[in-house]
Image 1: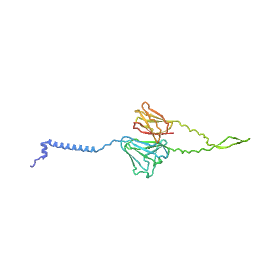
Image 2: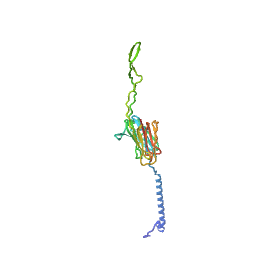
Image 3: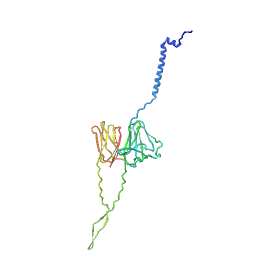
Image 4: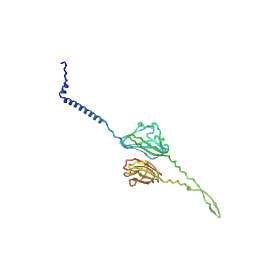
Length: 315
């Protein structure tokens, strides 16, 4: 009919029962909220979390002293709880090599032939808790000069820069044995009786044994005392020592003092002589030992996770 307004069915239901309409909107809201929560849970469950690697890397050379021309091998021990990768750039040297020049570390370089580069060159992968040895024999010019050297390695995830120091020495001149020279010895006059006449004869003869020659005494060397510092974690400084027989090795316990630190020496490079272990603690904060045998040893602290070092004793 003209001039009259009519309500729709939904409006009529809302007017007659407003709570029924509100309930329907509440159900829609709950369903949407549950869907959002469920989808968020599924998305978060797919995200994997990773823990940061912990540990360290340790570098060691086979010897603490080399002769010019000897190949240098480096062992890399991965102490992290995850693998590490080392990027190499063959035919350039695979690791950073430095030589001490005027008390400053200067990086040096060398190139090898491309035929010496393996097909898999580019990345060296070392699994967790494993070691690999890298040979630098294909880069002989790196160590063609006598002096102090350092090899360093940049490791991902680590702010530390592990390195190892060692010496390269000039080979001694070859020993040439000299044949003993024959010396003439003038014998005294010998008298011989011939009947009633006396004749005197003089002979020159070679001595069967050469006379000893006077030798100049070698200059005596004053024994020295070399200090090796260690802390409660079993970390040593320095990690490469070069001494002579008769020198004294003194281990000093650096503060703060914790449990005792027992330094154990292991013979290497065919050395048969042994060095007694040395223990420092809160009561005896320093120990000294006179080195009487030549050879090579490695040392580290028993029952500690610190670093290790090398000791070379020359005659």
